[in-house]
Image (cartoon, rainbow, N blue to C red):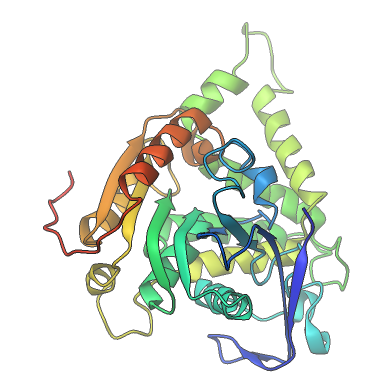
Length: 349
């Protein structure tokens, strides 16, 4: 699978008011949108357009979602490191630290431009987890395209103070790297490693660290497995991502609020989403706790809430593939023929 690229040679105005003179959108497409139902994937923070690689448990031949059954599209988000316009490849030299702040609304605006270019006016399934879920629910809330089925995993309708605090701690770590601010793709690399270490504390759970990073015996005074794990995760990310993109994308996550700029309440916006919706929470998720998904499911008229019991925390959506396959297949079977109706919503405990 190769990356395609759409280049928009006209101004792209960001929510902040800053205008990019042009825009690149890197994406992958499997199948034909003219003859197959469209499945659009919104990727998570440091993900990319190659959904079959990072979500291989549910995407690919013989999996829940394959190009035999769907035209699968995944676009690299604005601000990322994988080909779309971002801090390392922006026009007019507004690169690196000069790259402007972006929001999830800006990301969705770019998705709609790509959909228009591909002549797509209906999405059969829109799916996203984490910040990918934030993009998906924002797109559904905007009603700029018809969405039949919506799958939201470990996400929210407005980012929480707790999540914003975690992200600010990560940005402080990046700012503490004295190379951050230089015009280089490797600038801020050590700060990025530290930021990723902080993030891993929110992506996994206490139980997961106990099970996987615990020590045998009682003689150690240093060189603990948990420390090695955090360092390894930082090193791994710093080899494939850059600090400038990470900085801007965490700000975009913080910006997430589907009601901003609408003049309506959060509840009213959710009530207006007509897609048949599956909302998945993870019981051990610290970053996006189940109460956030229950709120979404309680207010979207045609929503079902399902909870995954897992020791892995937020990252369970990248690990618990057997459970996900069963849950997604059940949802697909039950929603093959969709009639959109307004239904009474029970209060979720």
